Image 1 (tube, rainbow, N blue to C red):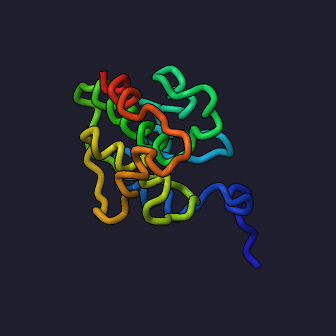
Image 2: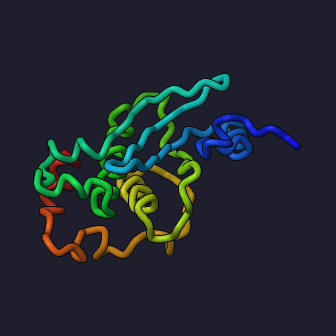
Image 3: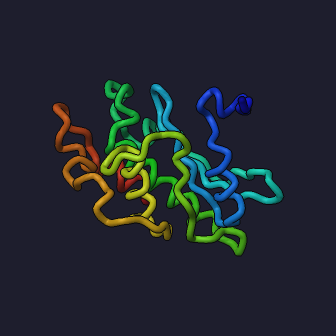
Length: 165
């Protein structure tokens, strides 16, 4: 019987998928979900070492006008979209010849469910101008992205405008 590597046993790393991503030499947008937050990072790999060039934590939305009383919803679909938009703008501001404006979405071992939070982050990245291959029907509905399905409304447009500045 084959002994699995520790990170595979713990459900943290799919080594076969990681190897194919590394061999492509295209920068990755890594999106991870914790119990409270969404983490998104722009990562380039050189000689099997990852270099994080830009990163965003959904907690940063509080600086842009996300309501303090809704701090528990920092991993909702509207928050995920805004995180993708914010990361896309950060990548654009890095500029230079080192930054490529195309990337691969890496969601790790998170289940790939269409119209989910991970694809709301992707929608934000695409709307900010980052080129990522995707199918159009995979994004959440515009009403869900704007937060119209929530009981208590958030000031989505105001937060979006502050991020885009």
